[in-house]
Image (cartoon, rainbow, N blue to C red):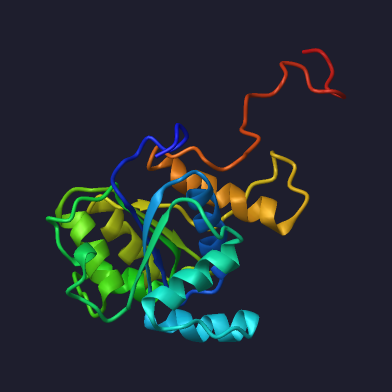
Length: 218
């Protein structure tokens, strides 16, 4: 690992069928560029979302999928990337004995939130996330939905009570974003903050001047 990636255990990146695959692509870009080891698992619905949002067909075979994700992220070499089939519930990340630095689910659908909140694991992504909770490891969920229904809010509350960190895909403007990527990267940086990972360039809030231009004296 490079000096910018002090974490030696792999990080799991889960990608669900929620809209906003740009979050996953850019998150992977920053992790690989910082030389992290990433275990990636995409849900079955992700294949359909790639087709819908970008008219791109994501391959199923793990090695081809690794090449696909690297191409999308624009990082041909660097870091370590291992892709898992969504249905392989016997994969390494399905076991608590496989030690990880935690897991980020980005973007996270409300269907995935509901299943995790109720202890249901119908695929590898959900099983891996459930393992993080039962092992007391960090689980970061980046839900991308609006508006939230009462059911959504209750499920998110249940997961927060169980130890997950909820980082909604809500950008900020104090860092003066100029592009869509700037808005996306803010959310990714705040999600990575929960894992003490600092590999996303971000103009962080440092407080405002005691006097703002245009304000009168008290």
